[in-house]
Image 1 (cartoon, rainbow, N blue to C red):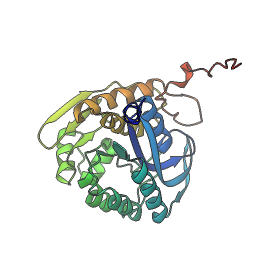
Image 2 (cartoon, rainbow, N blue to C red; image 1 turned 120 degrees about the vertical axis):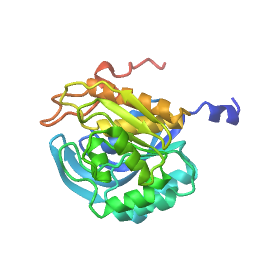
Image 3 (spheres, one colour; image 1 turned 135 degrees about the vertical axis):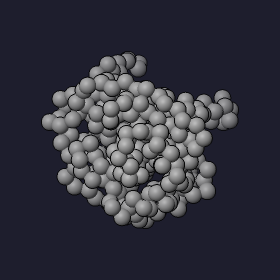
Length: 276
């Protein structure tokens, strides 16, 4: 096989820029599982470490911005991704570092504006919100807040996702996808600055939703990396995130269990074969 043919046979690459969840349910860990679920090679730039389990976040250790920059340079120079997603970025200096490295790259970018953990722990510092809006939103292909994040970002108390999505685009994001995991209506709502698209999603009444938002945005990025258009990627992301909840690991810990994009309970160890 020629080097050109071999390169063409390789999977698409996607990069997550986010924080580590020591409990394995959300953050970098959830993103890499979602990338694998979509047949994409996942890469990661870790901006913070969390001491976290199913009951909450007990401590956060921020990586120095210079080290975040080192990680970005290492990946972008040798393994340029076909799409990128950002998750929990924690602080204004981290956001500025990420924005400076992504500006002008032209790589599809999904921004999940992670503000609060499902356990209630705050994951984005107050002074970082303005940096997120001013520096990263304009670089995005789409932002993917849940209903509460979208309301906090826009200052709107309504559950009208169309109105909220328009307000998010007015803040500088080219497109906004307000996800349907919360509120009365289980609908993902996409607005690209021109047209609205409502996508019903299935909710499962399970105590295993930890990491659902990360899985959603990572799947969307993986689909963009594989060449899907935004609407198709958004539809697929909603389906995969819902299925990850359906397969969620209820009872794995004392709190809300993690979603399971890979449905690991149906997997078994590889069979060892005689190599003689």
